[in-house]
Image 1 (cartoon, rainbow, N blue to C red):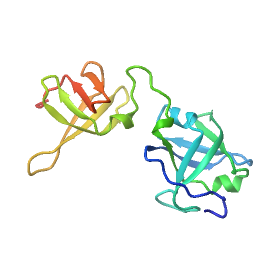
Image 2: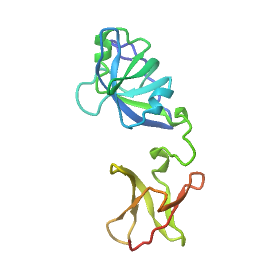
Image 3: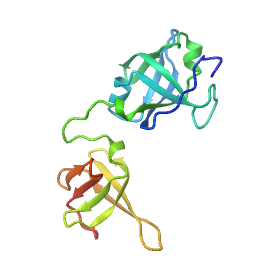
Image 4: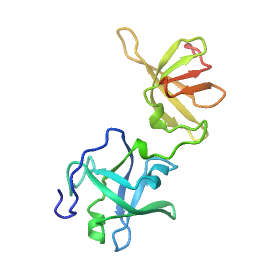
Length: 190
């Protein structure tokens, strides 16, 4: 429990995903700016409860995981601002500065057909049309015009092989979330 903020410690949900962090206070009534980790911050707008953990570096005004009930969140100019229950003045909002924001994956809005949250693709096995294993999705990388799957494949007695495949319809045949796999038109020697 943080005395200054009067926030109660809670358990982080098992399906929690880090979606952003709190920047500085905004105004005098407890609003604060949010820096989203995603260009389309749908999860921040959809979730009515955010889970916070202190920043990995810098001042810590609370410890563990705390929950914030979000009163309002909205875009403002080129950023996002939010207001939470119990955060009613600038100093309380400033005490949250740097906090990491998590929301449960179950609170994310449903993606449109043929759209995927990056977090759902991490860890999927990737196979080509012939059934050859190409690796596992370690991360996704935005290169501007497209997203790239960054795969990692274990090699016998050596450093894992890294492979990059553009995540575009020309190369990705299907994403099977339930089967935890992606099928691509790609050869191991590319």
